[in-house]
Each structure stands twice: as structure tokens, then as C-alpha cells.
Length: 456
Ligand code: TYD
Ligand code: MG
Image (cartoon, rainbow, N blue to C red; front, side, top):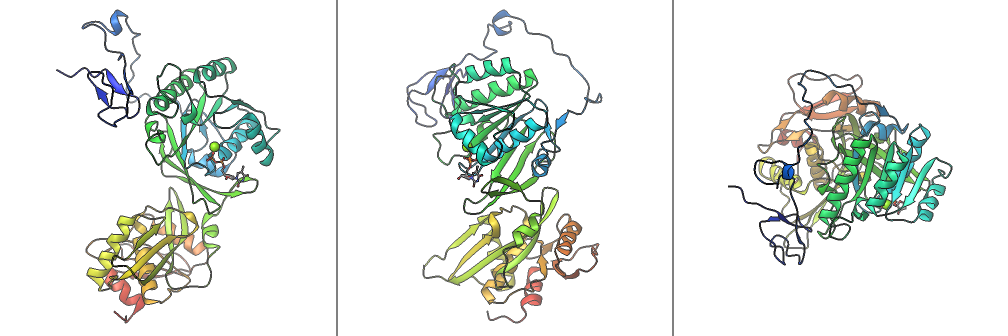
């Protein structure tokens, strides 16, 4: 028989069959409370005897109508949403504190309001005066957005019920306080319960809700992950604080493609759309230098060129440094190992630094070959031809694998004035006017062809 786990920890969410003063899961004191599950009524009865409403069932074939959408008019945002904001949907916008979530949402709120939606912006973090000051800075003070500074969820829901907006923005979910949950704002149970209340309220009342969630490094405050499963769409706002580029990435979208990105630039007057990100990411590139390689990537449905930089220097430490910004550290280790064991290019005793320029974060294996090229180029102190782009996946055997959307990558490179591309050999070689292709079967062949005789 299944154990009756009717006690759970407010901090970490672990379930127990009996109460105790300290949670075995996370070690928190006085955090365990009893909860009455819906199905806890006496056997044979539902919900303690009360009967529920029968649900209408349907089949798989009958098509529901496409949900209606509203465009914001900000192309980068609408594309990430999958073609505008779906009515009565729940969204989560996550990101590091200070990255620009409030700025993005205030700008989006103003656009949606201008396009006819009734929008309420509720800030639990800033006073009305602070939000109004930001609005003035963004030149949006005349927008018909209604504003409140409030954290009490009961009051917020009552107000939303009376006002009946089309869109409510909650900034942030970690500051919301539901008075029926016995723990501090920001704890797992508060965040989970507030998000649940807001999402169900939104669905029931035909209102869209956007919740802001701060990504947190320590466990005391619950991060957006706790909420991800409840909402229709999860967007993450990323970027390096020192750079002006910001990327809005959809990691989950029930109404559109996931992994789509929108690129913005943080300016003195808020976020500006970047219509041609490749040109922007390459604009800071100087003369061709050893260790710099242009990678032709795909982000979502869009090709995007960016620069990958490597620096290799003799290490003063017994354990050389491996430092990565914008790419996966494990993947770097793999490529170093393949270079060493399959191509005879050792990195022993050398510090390796790898950086994706412009604060972009790449997760495609298609960048393998560009990373390898940057590493060898830095090690050999030999620059690659400046008018060439590079992409391809590397397998552990040292073989090169073709990647998806080769043609789109090549077209983007050609559009930005590149004249050659170094890519893996593939069954059907693509042809793009004005672009010379150099193909390689394996990494050793690539290193040999591009760098010739080396000083190993
Ligand atoms: P904010 O939207 O408050 O970040 P978040 O809500 O994610 O915590 O904005 C953070 C930073 O953006 C802040 O350091 C100031 C900067 N900023 C600009 O550079 N230009 C602007 O127009 C605005 C409004 C903010
Ligand atoms: Mg904020």
C-alpha cells in the first residue's frame, strides 16, 4: 500500500508520513506542515463525500481553434513568443537579477497596451515611483499601463478579478506572499503556490499572466525552475552584465518553437531590438588574429555568426587552467582530448582560455570544429583566413560530422561578406554562390590542411 505522505517541507518540498521538527531532506527547522490532499477523503468517497463535476471528453481528431494572439510590435519578442502573445496564457520570464527583466516587461507592457490590451503591471520589488521613473527614462510615461506596488497575492487576485485586465505582469514571483501558506515569500512553497494561484486564475478568467523569476544561486530562495512546469511558456533573459547584448531565449513554449531567440541591446533608453545579430556580433572584430575564428551557428530558426576566441599560454601552475565563457567546459575538455590523442596536438602544460565574443552562449555541438580551429590557431600562433567561417561536429574518433541547416549557415556567411567556409564532408555537398568550400573528413586532416607543418 502506498504510504500516506501528508506532511511536506516548505523549504525543499520533500514529503513525509509524519511531522518532525527538522526536515531530513534539507535540514531546515520548523518547516514541515501537514497538507490535506484532495483525495484524502474516506475510501469510496471523493473529496470527503462531495462529488465533482463530470468533465467533457473529446477525441484526438477534433481540432480546437488556433488560440488568438496579440502582437507586441517588437519583432524580436513576438518571434520568441511564437508569433505574438497567446490570449489567456501563462508565461515565466527568468534571468539573473539586474539583467533587464523589468525593463523588458515594462517596454512590452507599453507595446501591448498600445495595441489595445488592458495591461496591469504589479511590482513587488519596487515602489510606484521607481517604476514611474523607469517609464520616464524609457519615454513610456504616457502609456496606458496601470501600475501597483503590492505583494499580497489575495489583494492582487481580488483587484485583477475586479479590473479584468487582458494581461497582468507580476514582477517578481519571488516577492509574492500568499497568506494561506505558512512560510516566507521566496520559499519553495510560497513561489509554487503563488504561481499556481496566478496561473489558474489567469486560465479561468481569460487573462494572460507574465511572471518574473530571478535565477538564484543559493538554495534559500526558490528559482524559476519550481514554476516551469506550470506555465505555457518559459523565457530566459540572458547576457553578460558587462556587455550590452541581451538574449531572450524560449526554453519551453506550448504555442510555438522552443529554443528561439530574440536579440536586444541595452541602451541608455532601454532595450533596442537587434535586427541583424550576426553583423552586431562580428562588428567588434578587428584584424584577423591567431585564436579568432568565425562560427556560423543556428539559434532557433535563425542563422547567426559569432566570433570564437581562444588563448593558449604556458602555464605557471602544475594543473593548467581551462577557462570557458559562453560554451560548455566539458565539451572543451573533450575537444582538447581529441586534438591531443587523434591529431597529435598536445595542450599539456598550457593554460587554455575560450571565449564566445559578445556575451553569447552557444550550446550547439556544431561549434566543435570552430572551437578546435581557434585552439589550434592560438597554439600555433597562426591566424585563419579572415574571410572564412567554420562549423562542424567532432566525434570522439576525431571524425567530422555534418550538422543541420548547413545551407542556411552558408547563406548567412555569404550575406555578411565571407567568401569561404571550412566544413565537414557530406554526402550532398551544398552550393552557395560566391562561397568557396573547403571540406575535411576528420580533425587531423583539417589541422593538416589549415595549419600545414606544425611545430609539435
Ligand atoms: P532591470 O530591468 O531593473 O533588471 P532586472 O529586473 O532583471 O533586475 O535593469 C537592470 C539594469 O539595466 C540596470 O542596471 C540599469 C540598466 N538600464 C539601462 O542600461 N538602460 C535603461 O534604459 C534601463 C531602464 C535600465
Ligand atoms: Mg526587476
